[in-house]
Image (cartoon, rainbow over all chains, first blue to last red; front, side):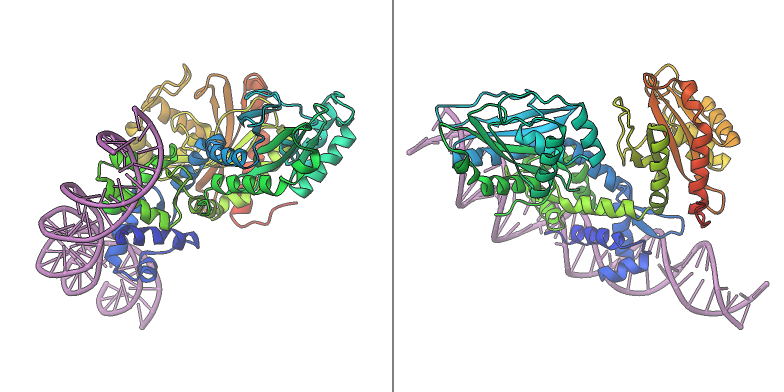
Length: 250
Length: 250
DNA sequence: AATGAACGTTGCATATTGTGCAACGCCCTC
DNA sequence: GAGGGCGTTGCACAATATGCAACGTTCATT
């Protein structure tokens, strides 16, 4: 690997501790002042480092401009897709990925069940906010005030006898989902369909997306589906790690 | 300056645009694949870059961590943040904090509007120097010679019909901003968005940062926004006092 | 006002270090 | 089973980064 680049990059964490002058940088790198100067100059040209008024060096603003841009161009779907495929490979059921956007929760990816009996859904379709596992996951991460405001505003259609009946029940459910880190929908939308889901989190811990596994009663019972929970959670965690920039573990 | 480091660092903005594979990186750098590989490996070891499951490279977690530290070390931000929150609490609009660094003006903090219609911006993003209220505030504090030199060097993109058209107009505007101690951007960047801003000064009276309140026409008219000016100025002054070492007044 | 220390900066000779090349191995497609 | 695409490795060469020593400035000390 490249010694020069290695040295240059070692400067960054060093400056993260606080501003430092040329001599300090050179010392801590174990190189000559002139060498440190050239490295700092190159970092400077790229905006990763800058020189404050007392001539000392500190981390530059371009660093967070880069990070910000990277986050913006991050596509959850792209990262999640192979994981969703792998999960489907293992359990055979329909796997969904959803995000919250403009007061709605939308499916943005889907891997079809490999069983002949499938649940109906389609990418881009808004999901039932009050009952869907992915909706509960995404909404449970909202600040409490917003959760309450939203819960009041919603309708609570009685899709089935097990649909969430009202705001109070919904808020209680969200609190529980938030607490336990996973969610279910057991026949709340369609009598014969059950789902289990888990949240996908960004580097800052906020929920950026949610995934779920869904299957009709006729294929597996609710209890059997719940047994998949650890697998679903592990998958969601793997996606979270990769999404927030950690190398996937081998 | 160091060619190797220069090449390595050029990879970062390239990856910020989105994931890329080895060949793409090598091409865009204009170097041999093997060279690109070694550079990427070094970046990888420092955690600035990582390899997602499809083998393509992406910006890594350490970059985000560094960016975070870089922002946190900007102490204006730390001091200003609660004030920005309070201001947003009162008026509901988007509040920005910006500093000048290395020929650019950058947003370093932001509190989102609580209205559904929001303006687009992001922390770390360089702002349009010739029109943004915060840019005018920061640049107006430069010594006259530097202002003139800078004004000559700049481009004057006509974002809208009300954008600053040329160096002469810009210098006149800066002089006025300097005189009155506040600045506006009335549809100069995006036709439907207005801003009012005020400077934050250090103990020596120099402008160290600038803040602004922004709102689209559809939410409040320019006149209504201007009525917030006293509030904005008072907030900026409170931040200035605290920043320059006076105890925050309760 | 003069001296000296501390720090950043520059040019240069040296050899360490990074480079391109070509060949290899792997995986996937046709 | 052949072929193309892609990442990877070892090697010989010279381009490139390095340390040194000397210079310039700024600032504190006497």
